[in-house]
Image 1 (cartoon, rainbow over the protein chains, first blue to last red):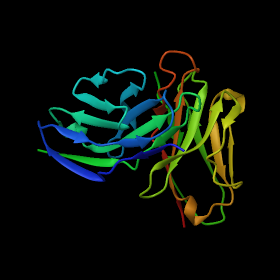
Image 2 (cartoon, rainbow over the protein chains, first blue to last red):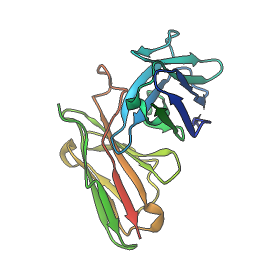
Image 3 (cartoon, rainbow over the protein chains, first blue to last red):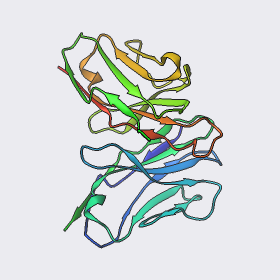
Length: 114
Length: 117
Protein backbone atom coordinates (compact mmCIF):
# COMPACT_ATOMS: atom_id res chain seq x y z
CA UNK A 1 0.00 0.00 0.00
CA UNK A 2 1.14 3.50 -0.74
CA UNK A 3 1.98 5.84 2.11
CA UNK A 4 2.84 9.53 2.25
CA UNK A 5 4.83 11.09 5.07
CA UNK A 6 5.24 14.73 5.95
CA UNK A 7 7.70 14.85 8.82
CA UNK A 8 7.29 18.55 9.66
CA UNK A 9 4.02 19.20 11.52
CA UNK A 10 4.72 22.94 11.80
CA UNK A 11 7.06 25.39 10.14
CA UNK A 12 7.50 29.13 10.08
CA UNK A 13 9.28 31.51 7.74
CA UNK A 14 9.83 35.23 7.55
CA UNK A 15 8.06 37.12 4.82
CA UNK A 16 10.12 37.29 1.59
CA UNK A 17 12.30 34.35 2.58
CA UNK A 18 12.35 30.84 1.13
CA UNK A 19 11.02 27.72 2.81
CA UNK A 20 11.03 24.05 1.86
CA UNK A 21 8.41 21.55 2.97
CA UNK A 22 9.34 17.90 2.94
CA UNK A 23 7.36 14.93 1.68
CA UNK A 24 8.36 11.33 1.18
CA UNK A 25 6.26 8.50 -0.14
CA UNK A 26 6.40 4.77 -0.54
CA UNK A 27 5.21 2.94 -3.63
CA UNK A 28 6.20 0.14 -5.95
CA UNK A 29 4.49 1.85 -8.88
CA UNK A 30 6.43 3.43 -11.72
CA UNK A 31 3.73 5.75 -13.02
CA UNK A 32 1.88 8.04 -10.64
CA UNK A 33 1.07 11.63 -9.78
CA UNK A 34 2.15 13.77 -6.86
CA UNK A 35 0.41 16.89 -5.64
CA UNK A 36 0.78 19.69 -3.16
CA UNK A 37 -2.46 21.19 -1.91
CA UNK A 38 -2.81 24.13 0.45
CA UNK A 39 -5.65 24.94 2.82
CA UNK A 40 -5.60 28.51 4.17
CA UNK A 41 -7.32 29.09 7.51
CA UNK A 42 -11.09 28.70 7.18
CA UNK A 43 -10.86 28.36 3.42
CA UNK A 44 -11.01 25.50 1.02
CA UNK A 45 -8.18 23.38 -0.20
CA UNK A 46 -6.65 24.36 -3.51
CA UNK A 47 -4.06 22.76 -5.73
CA UNK A 48 -0.62 24.33 -5.58
CA UNK A 49 1.34 22.17 -7.96
CA UNK A 50 1.37 18.70 -9.47
CA UNK A 51 4.06 16.43 -10.84
CA UNK A 52 3.80 13.44 -13.16
CA UNK A 53 6.30 10.74 -12.18
CA UNK A 54 7.33 10.07 -15.78
CA UNK A 55 8.49 13.66 -16.17
CA UNK A 56 12.03 14.26 -15.00
CA UNK A 57 11.67 18.02 -15.04
CA UNK A 58 10.56 19.51 -11.76
CA UNK A 59 7.22 21.30 -11.88
CA UNK A 60 7.07 25.02 -11.15
CA UNK A 61 4.18 27.44 -10.65
CA UNK A 62 5.35 31.00 -10.12
CA UNK A 63 6.92 31.12 -6.63
CA UNK A 64 6.24 27.43 -6.01
CA UNK A 65 8.53 24.69 -7.23
CA UNK A 66 9.17 21.08 -6.37
CA UNK A 67 12.26 18.96 -6.00
CA UNK A 68 11.15 15.56 -7.26
CA UNK A 69 13.62 12.78 -6.54
CA UNK A 70 11.99 9.63 -7.90
CA UNK A 71 14.66 7.18 -6.79
CA UNK A 72 14.61 8.59 -3.28
CA UNK A 73 10.79 8.86 -3.33
CA UNK A 74 10.99 12.44 -2.21
CA UNK A 75 8.78 15.35 -3.30
CA UNK A 76 9.58 18.59 -1.50
CA UNK A 77 7.89 21.93 -2.08
CA UNK A 78 9.90 25.13 -2.19
CA UNK A 79 8.15 28.45 -1.68
CA UNK A 80 10.22 31.44 -2.73
CA UNK A 81 9.62 35.03 -1.63
CA UNK A 82 7.11 33.87 0.98
CA UNK A 83 4.03 36.04 1.39
CA UNK A 84 1.59 36.38 4.27
CA UNK A 85 -1.06 34.77 2.09
CA UNK A 86 1.02 31.60 1.96
CA UNK A 87 0.08 30.90 5.58
CA UNK A 88 -1.84 27.64 5.37
CA UNK A 89 -1.74 23.93 5.96
CA UNK A 90 0.03 22.17 3.12
CA UNK A 91 -0.77 18.60 2.15
CA UNK A 92 1.32 16.33 0.00
CA UNK A 93 -0.66 13.69 -1.89
CA UNK A 94 -0.05 10.66 -4.10
CA UNK A 95 -2.27 9.16 -6.76
CA UNK A 96 -2.10 6.10 -8.95
CA UNK A 97 -3.82 7.06 -12.20
CA UNK A 98 -5.73 3.79 -12.33
CA UNK A 99 -7.19 4.23 -8.86
CA UNK A 100 -7.89 7.99 -8.82
CA UNK A 101 -8.05 8.30 -5.06
CA UNK A 102 -5.60 10.63 -3.37
CA UNK A 103 -3.43 9.41 -0.52
CA UNK A 104 -2.49 12.27 1.74
CA UNK A 105 0.29 13.02 4.16
CA UNK A 106 -0.43 14.35 7.62
CA UNK A 107 0.00 17.97 6.59
CA UNK A 108 2.41 20.75 7.48
CA UNK A 109 1.18 23.98 8.99
CA UNK A 110 3.17 26.89 7.59
CA UNK A 111 3.15 30.28 9.27
CA UNK A 112 4.57 33.22 7.35
CA UNK A 113 5.64 35.97 9.73
CA UNK A 114 5.79 39.66 8.85
CA UNK B 1 -17.34 28.82 -13.06
CA UNK B 2 -18.69 27.77 -9.66
CA UNK B 3 -16.47 25.55 -7.59
CA UNK B 4 -17.36 22.52 -5.52
CA UNK B 5 -19.90 23.42 -2.86
CA UNK B 6 -20.84 21.54 0.29
CA UNK B 7 -23.73 21.88 2.68
CA UNK B 8 -23.91 22.37 5.60
CA UNK B 9 -20.62 23.97 6.56
CA UNK B 10 -21.05 22.80 10.15
CA UNK B 11 -23.27 20.21 11.79
CA UNK B 12 -23.53 19.34 15.46
CA UNK B 13 -25.61 16.29 16.32
CA UNK B 14 -26.14 13.87 19.17
CA UNK B 15 -24.81 10.36 19.09
CA UNK B 16 -27.40 8.11 17.48
CA UNK B 17 -28.89 10.78 15.26
CA UNK B 18 -28.76 10.89 11.49
CA UNK B 19 -26.95 13.48 9.41
CA UNK B 20 -26.88 13.99 5.65
CA UNK B 21 -24.10 15.90 3.98
CA UNK B 22 -24.43 17.25 0.47
CA UNK B 23 -21.87 17.94 -2.22
CA UNK B 24 -22.39 19.75 -5.52
CA UNK B 25 -19.46 19.13 -7.85
CA UNK B 26 -18.23 21.43 -10.57
CA UNK B 27 -20.71 21.28 -13.42
CA UNK B 28 -19.79 18.61 -15.94
CA UNK B 29 -17.37 16.75 -13.70
CA UNK B 30 -18.00 13.01 -13.92
CA UNK B 31 -15.80 12.09 -10.99
CA UNK B 32 -16.85 12.84 -7.44
CA UNK B 33 -14.92 11.87 -4.31
CA UNK B 34 -15.57 11.93 -0.59
CA UNK B 35 -12.75 12.24 1.94
CA UNK B 36 -12.66 12.66 5.68
CA UNK B 37 -10.18 14.20 8.09
CA UNK B 38 -10.49 13.15 11.70
CA UNK B 39 -8.92 15.56 14.19
CA UNK B 40 -5.14 15.50 14.02
CA UNK B 41 -4.96 12.79 11.41
CA UNK B 42 -4.46 12.71 7.68
CA UNK B 43 -7.20 13.13 5.12
CA UNK B 44 -8.54 9.73 4.14
CA UNK B 45 -10.41 8.60 1.06
CA UNK B 46 -13.96 7.34 1.53
CA UNK B 47 -15.34 6.69 -1.95
CA UNK B 48 -15.36 7.61 -5.61
CA UNK B 49 -18.28 8.02 -8.00
CA UNK B 50 -18.07 8.05 -11.76
CA UNK B 51 -21.31 9.69 -12.74
CA UNK B 52 -23.91 7.83 -10.68
CA UNK B 53 -21.90 4.64 -10.20
CA UNK B 54 -19.69 3.82 -7.23
CA UNK B 55 -16.26 3.18 -8.68
CA UNK B 56 -14.44 2.60 -5.42
CA UNK B 57 -15.92 2.51 -1.95
CA UNK B 58 -13.00 0.83 -0.23
CA UNK B 59 -12.58 3.69 2.25
CA UNK B 60 -16.09 3.65 3.69
CA UNK B 61 -15.69 2.89 7.42
CA UNK B 62 -18.78 0.73 7.92
CA UNK B 63 -22.39 0.28 6.91
CA UNK B 64 -23.52 3.30 8.89
CA UNK B 65 -22.30 5.38 5.98
CA UNK B 66 -24.36 5.57 2.81
CA UNK B 67 -23.38 7.63 -0.21
CA UNK B 68 -25.53 8.32 -3.23
CA UNK B 69 -25.22 10.32 -6.40
CA UNK B 70 -28.59 10.52 -8.03
CA UNK B 71 -28.49 11.30 -11.73
CA UNK B 72 -24.75 11.75 -11.63
CA UNK B 73 -25.00 15.30 -10.34
CA UNK B 74 -24.89 16.13 -6.64
CA UNK B 75 -24.02 13.57 -4.00
CA UNK B 76 -25.15 12.94 -0.45
CA UNK B 77 -23.36 11.16 2.36
CA UNK B 78 -25.62 9.95 5.14
CA UNK B 79 -24.39 8.78 8.51
CA UNK B 80 -26.94 6.74 10.44
CA UNK B 81 -26.69 6.35 13.37
CA UNK B 82 -23.82 8.74 14.07
CA UNK B 83 -21.13 7.74 16.57
CA UNK B 84 -18.59 9.89 18.40
CA UNK B 85 -15.73 8.71 16.19
CA UNK B 86 -17.52 10.04 13.10
CA UNK B 87 -16.60 13.59 14.09
CA UNK B 88 -14.31 15.29 11.62
CA UNK B 89 -14.26 17.31 8.44
CA UNK B 90 -15.81 15.72 5.39
CA UNK B 91 -14.45 16.92 2.08
CA UNK B 92 -15.89 16.46 -1.34
CA UNK B 93 -13.87 16.78 -4.52
CA UNK B 94 -14.58 16.50 -8.23
CA UNK B 95 -12.60 16.07 -11.41
CA UNK B 96 -13.37 15.95 -15.12
CA UNK B 97 -14.01 12.81 -17.15
CA UNK B 98 -11.03 10.47 -17.04
CA UNK B 99 -8.84 10.97 -20.06
CA UNK B 100 -9.60 14.63 -20.52
CA UNK B 101 -7.09 17.34 -19.84
CA UNK B 102 -6.70 17.90 -16.13
CA UNK B 103 -8.66 14.79 -15.19
CA UNK B 104 -6.10 13.85 -12.56
CA UNK B 105 -6.54 17.09 -10.66
CA UNK B 106 -9.22 17.04 -8.00
CA UNK B 107 -10.97 20.25 -6.97
CA UNK B 108 -12.06 20.36 -3.39
CA UNK B 109 -15.05 21.84 -1.62
CA UNK B 110 -14.76 23.76 1.65
CA UNK B 111 -15.72 20.74 3.73
CA UNK B 112 -18.41 20.01 6.29
CA UNK B 113 -17.32 19.98 9.90
CA UNK B 114 -19.30 17.30 11.71
CA UNK B 115 -19.36 17.15 15.49
CA UNK B 116 -21.05 14.22 17.19
CA UNK B 117 -21.74 14.77 20.90
